[in-house]
Image (tube, helix red, strand yellow):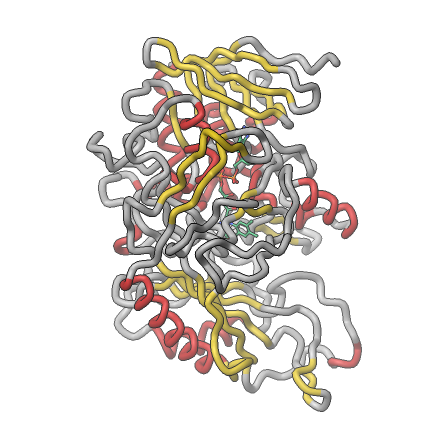
Length: 507
Ligand SMILES: Cc1cc2nc3c(=O)[nH]c(=O)nc-3n(C[C@H](O)[C@H](O)[C@H](O)COP(=O)(O)OP(=O)(O)OC[C@H]3O[C@@H](n4cnc5c(N)ncnc54)[C@H](O)[C@@H]3O)c2cc1C
């Protein structure tokens, strides 16, 4: 069977079409328009423009198809009891994502039972919530002097706004009540505020969620020297004389293999599959896959007290989308109160807690607190050369354990979320839930950045892999600090720095 035409060479090959790979393509299109760029994505194109958020797809059946097409090569939502983590029980993946089928936990360790990925043009950002908070205090990468300017660029690329839900009638009420409980002693950066979100409202009132399409922007789509090839699995990075020299890529439609030479290779294949590709290519720095960290997550629901119904409950008036009533509010992380809080409407439809107790639509809010991990080099993803994953790549094996400090922080988070739930209304249920590890979808550290090649980092501050000139890594795996806040804005900011370095070398 004859496959598609693949280019023999490019100046820059980008592996992965999520927002961090897209950030490289965008900055290179802006700063080095003469450079040829090829982006390979293992998953299919599921939205239009390519990389667009599936929530923007109006037709429900079409949206469901797009989510299912993103869920990778294996089964999903299966009941698997994790070895060594007896309380894991049934595992479920969020729409648009898929779980590791095995190797997610080992005896005597906690593992990451619901660690998840997405395989589609746009990556996880075709399915994400779009929360783009900035890191605070110990979440910040102190050795990057230009961090704030890079975060500003990240906002620009992701189309971050703070006013899309200003008309939400309960938003201010939620924030006022949270502020009263939280703000004392905090700085302007860390008081309760609107969550910065990668979303904008069209003139006709419809919300448009940003995906990689927004990051790529017209400048990349119009760039005649940029191409995006979907359903293409990069199986190894080629090195010559110790430098990045190209990739081997398999056309999943035909099964044909191609070699594409390149001056620069950027691997932006998520926090599990970026180290996987380096491993498969024989590039194995000591820190590869290590310092893996996920944000343990505690959730609770609360019913807003004393809010008047905006529409009669019995009218069944259609509610048009998530968070339309209460927006998304942010309780920033601080070192003293080490949780990142995201508070948003839980259920848009009128529900009844009891038959004679109809709930004001939009008055149930969900509270989530994310915890920063106590970093350990031993928390890691390893790769098994004897076994393969659904794509035929070395199978990931997760070794992950919460420390005593992590357990303490989670207990504090449970107490804090109960306090916040009571501050905004009446808690629903008698206690908060601690979600299974991996639920955050924010995995970091596996290709972390550092200032010196001392075995505790994989790349330098431009995201170039130590000892392999021309090879760059991108994604949440590059973040060296244990953040509690949603990491995508930060990893897009780090990608901007790396892309500028490549653009400068190409000039
Ligand atoms: C439901 C949900 C809600 C979320 N909410 C938020 C939020 O509010 N805020 C936030 O900051 N983050 C959120 N996230 C996480 C966010 O989506 C990710 O942080 C972000 O997408 C990471 O970007 P990335 O480019 O590094 O990787 P990804 O978006 O994961 O993209 C990596 C891409 O690489 C491809 N790939 C992998 N291996 C190969 C290979 N060998 N060859 C070719 N292609 C390959 C994958 O198929 C994938 O498409 C959420 C995620 C989900 C699923």
